[in-house]
Length: 343
Image (tube, rainbow, N blue to C red; front, side, top):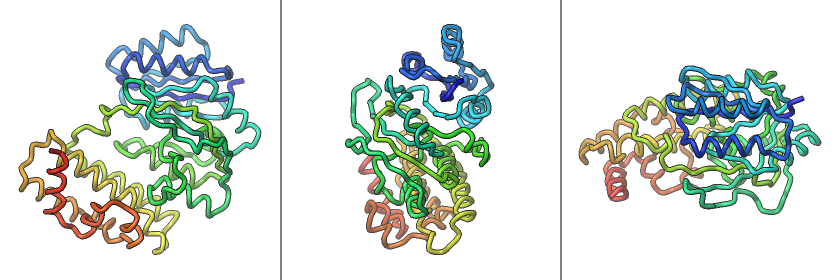
């Protein structure tokens, strides 16, 4: 029986990265794997590479589909999965050789809905940057309402006390497949950014038991050329989508006035991303006056204005000074500071 289903969405990945990823999976010390490579209509040789490995290893299944985005690819993987547990791996990342063995043994022993584990960060030249663990081999159980709120606050970037846990991404987790099925947890197909964060909100909200093992088994490739850094003239609409979905979640589970602070971390981050990717990106080629007007327009956008209205003093005290300028809507100063920084 396949104990762990590993889902890898594949789209236009550098060949050396893709091969490294697949080989790190097939050479795991734990062999009871169901490996799903979801070729999301990649226009290059990625689909052929997936088929090549499938011929070599009968644990690999390849799904070819027209390009529909990473969210749909992950949903397809969930639907095809056969294992008791599900793990997501990005195609430009890779795994420690013993990670599946380590996390499966812990998950099988304690039976949590979600088992998180640590990770290491490498740059695009494979140079080690940072180890994201506590460094003491601890094992943590999150089961009380207070602990669940801490998890959600960490996903929403309003409480960083659980750092180095990275809870707003799909990787670095072993998830009970039956738990996903029972709660009908899937990715929202049309979200372009922060789809992982929205998925993880519902994931942790519905989980009864969440555990963490201090084992750095996931190797994250910090690639500065990713889609998250590219110019997007439509960033405002993209992040309006993100905030609408976040507010839907909060209104469903945390409608109380005292919970309004939960929207602030992602809200302010979304505003900053609109500035970075649309207004002040080096490909935008806007004049100072045009940038100033765009900043004012963003700050007066109804959804972003709602974030600013919900701002608490405590949040401003614990965050970067630029957030205070956003809160005060000091558009001229914001424009000036961004132009100085990017130069």
